[in-house]
Length: 454
Image 1 (cartoon, rainbow, N blue to C red):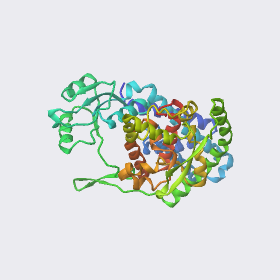
Image 2 (spheres, helix red, strand yellow; image 1 turned 180 degrees about the vertical axis):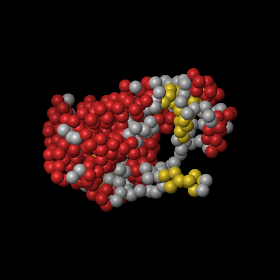
Image 3 (cartoon, rainbow, N blue to C red; image 1 turned 60 degrees about the vertical axis):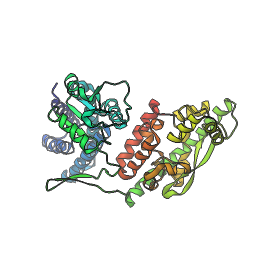
Image 4 (cartoon, rainbow, N blue to C red; image 1 turned 120 degrees about the vertical axis):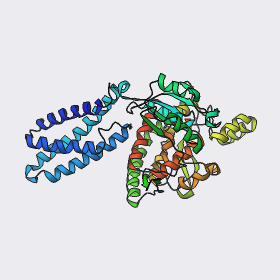
């Protein structure tokens, strides 16, 4: 099925639904036609009918913008003499169409994903390539289907380029089989995921795939310097990327703090029955020690704060960790590398449940209410991890640590320490209400499906 049919299918469904909603509110034909043209024009301007790959929160953002602009236009254009009831009808109509447009777009993308998704080949087998594949194939809303990967390691054609191979159980082709992979898998799009490659290697890859597919995308190594405000500029034939290290404005800080206060109050109210529940679970298991512990962490501007958590480990866990590392070099190496143990013997049965559901973090809403933490922000790092944070330390401490954040929303404990720092650095440079919304959505989804816990 031709992918270009999708916008027309979506438009047809929405026009029909818009017409029936207008009829339900007894609007005259002139108002239906005039407002309809205006509404669908805003949808088109904000990319609702675009064939570009996007995730669902990008679509929500576009729909909010178009709906808001349309609603303001209606308030200006529709005379006040129409009365309060008519204006309420218009408000309900805009809200209803927002839901209908989102559901219609989601349904079409999911139902016809096999027909509309771009068959994609990723050149690269490193961490970034694996993450691209996971995002593309797990997000049914996105119209990108990764069919396979090309291993660019240790080939004479790419000057013996080397990257860590983390791709498992997927269709992997050698670089010499690139043309075969494109034909066999009927590839329409190639994503070059070799951010650590030299300019010489990238030029060779681009030359080898030139003209063989409809679309080529390239994942650059930006070293955390690019933000959402970055833009590509044509400087008299020279390609420039304009960027800036964004800082939150006073208004943004005020808005974020207001959200934190609301979340802190709600979290603390639910904390009371939760304490009783956790205490009951521990006592039932024969553990009568305190269920809440405090720990020093690095706060905003490097100030030390005490965060509160439900205890998920045996008492004196730090002392036991030192003993384990002293006795077993492998445990020491694992902890020093990732700042965690995959199979940590210190975790109690109740603690395992608390971590899987993220309930162990709930007492941190007290820190949020006190203004020491935020609902969303960088991970609250331990003082001994400061040196390991390296270059990311200075940007990470400019934000309050969060109950949840980028690393929890992107794999939780599955994410390696260095990549956690990169994600938190990314959050500082790219903060927005929309990014916070995305993190909350992905965190909840991760907890519900139990991904990356412990």
